[in-house]
Length: 90
Image (cartoon, rainbow, N blue to C red; front, top):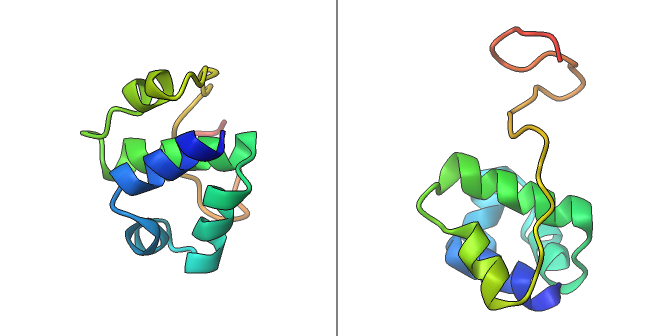
């Protein structure tokens, strides 16, 4: 999983770029790279979907022999809010 996370972060532009796109600290993105979890991988997939749709996440996963579980919904949510930004309830 480490190689997949690192490759995905690199494809998105690297640690600093991913940190800026996702409004996280560089240390948090570095931790995603060095200690990936399913939730961190899914967060990176959402960032890729929203910010860099040209990045082929599935191809990177195949390259590293990583099986991607489907993400039920890729949407942006306001912190602490159960409604998405379009106002629809989840």
